[in-house]
Length: 474
Image 1 (cartoon, rainbow, N blue to C red):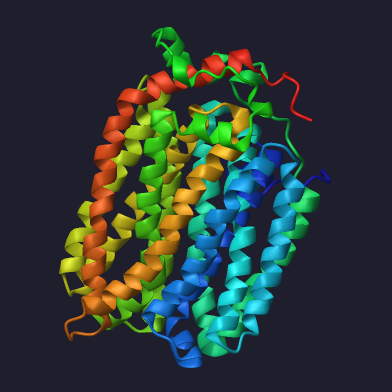
Image 2 (cartoon, rainbow, N blue to C red; image 1 turned 90 degrees about the vertical axis):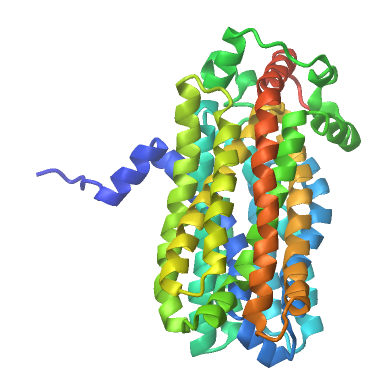
């Protein structure tokens, strides 16, 4: 008889796929950061009716409550990206989660729209930390050959958070109060801040990249680029130590990388649609299809599971295709996913039959989610590891600006396009128009296939010139 207990099946599956207990802990904690951030917007989407009644506001102001954190985060993310590349990231992340939780507590005691808006402005200032720090930590925790797949597992937290906010936040608001929904999420945030502080160890910079001593052979895309003798773009090869670059110099460099610019635009378009969807999807489905909160609560896990499957499959599929010789798979997979998502949303928005619409919405959500992990991995592929934080902060500015505009624009346009058929009619027309950016992403990412190999080669050459052993800026 042995004293050691055999791990449970779910634990074996998790640790096996993530590479052991240590890597599993990293995946779970980083996923929880994104989940917490997304849960907030999910809660707002779930309590639209309660906020309208309690604070006497309309759709446009509900959109403002979602947009405010994104707008402030877009401004704050650039200095945060600068800090991410220069200071220990784990304390920075844990501290931001703690401040985020305090802002949620303050929001829960708001007695007016203005009070709640101020708390959410403070929320946005600390939300900005998540994007740059999580991206930089993923790059240094996980091997480049598994980057898209690991990104998929971490990004799954974002979907869990939105679903959690919609489902749990909505039910708590219905049973008790929308204020308790805020406080419940804040309590989870305090627990996560402690878990990050005690459970996450700061990794070495460049530990998994080309500059980390493993060389280009460590990553299939880099290996194929080297084998095919793809020439780097001379203008994209660093001539200054990235650890010593100013914020302006770093911004100019990362915006000179064509693939990175395309990824920034595509990501912004995708999150623009997603931000509007997560804010108004619940009220839209209830009013258009006559589905009650209880029925919708039962179906939300199905959509969430499909989206979770999409985000996990998207990253792993891209990595597998790259290993099989498809060097541009990390831009091809999201291009196909965006196009498929728009094609599935279109008939769902035209029908009034819930039995037809809900399965289509489920598949469309899975396709939309599948695009994100490869896109996030591409950014790390084409940028020197000492610029990951600043590069992500620039991408986050575009993303959060789109997320700030979308809820307000969706709310305002839904009223403008409502011709007397109710909120659902206006929202339906807005969602139809918002499919155009998703289709545009398919075309943009087709263009990126031509630039990606040379941009990977440029990043490789930059890492050879300035490897992980280079002395960082003081």
